[in-house]
Image (cartoon, rainbow, N blue to C red; front, side, top):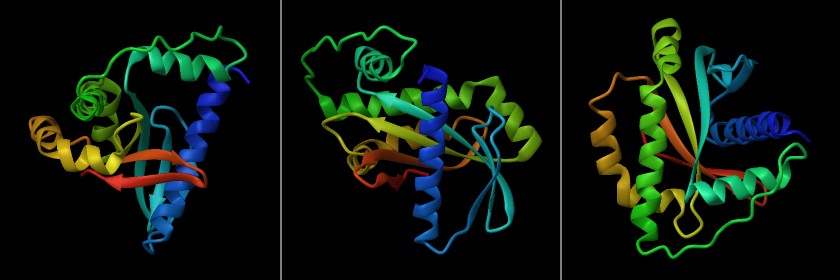
Amino acid sequence: MKHREIQSAHEQSVLESFNKYLGNQGISLVIVERPDPPDAIVKIDNANCWVEITDAFQSEDWAKSITSYAADDKTHQAYQRSVMYEPDSEACEKVKEVILKKYDKNSMNRLLNQHGQGILLVGAYTPLTSPKEIIEQGSQFILEEISRKAPVFKSIYLYRNTSIGHSFAKLL
């Protein structure tokens, strides 16, 4: 598979897992279309909404290693191991950076103006810190930072791959 195809399949998989997650809470999610951006236009309990999916990796090297390994059209770039002195705080910082980048994107602000607030799903690819731990340890400073931004997202969830799909934890 090419990198672009893998990305689309990944996003579809995350959306399917998010649908199951919401369904377990008695909430209905229907994917209406996949325009990019956003990654999906959806109906949640018959209300129109949009979803953006992004990933936060512990390091740029690790991101390149993971994404290049699976793609036929990229040369694999092996992960260059490095010492992590504060893995929890580093994970919180990476997640915060990725979230703030989305808040600052012009396309996200256009979506806010056109469709109202959306939902952000952030993959937490931080090997030593789970999404729940990131929320427990970093939510205060992450939420403080985004409180100064336009309210692009009404909800933010962190997720991680599991053996049966993805597990989600709500940040906002």
